[in-house]
Image (cartoon, rainbow, N blue to C red; front, side, top):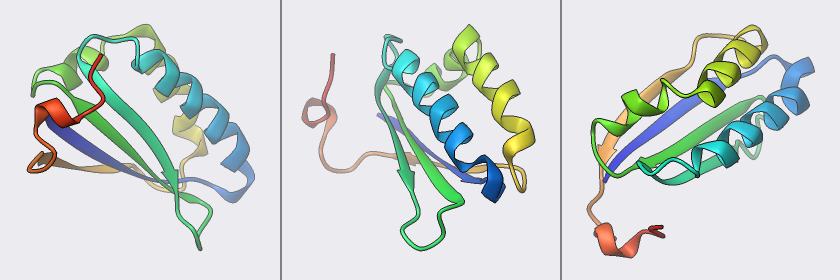
Length: 104
């Protein structure tokens, strides 16, 4: 598995709009064959900070995801909502192994 954590800081006035757009993107993303999970978490104490936890089946799947219409729509919608540019960190799974993920 190829796991990407995307760190996002949004403007306070945009929290709810960001959540709505991001949930729509996540729902559509789960329909992609290369995505095993797509989670959205919000910081407990700093409500303007979010992490997207994207679990891909291979290292080539993030690039495929970025070519989808729903990703492009999300990117263009949320860009002006961000307080700073988003960043990401990439990981490989240790536990569970591939069979332990909620695979389609």
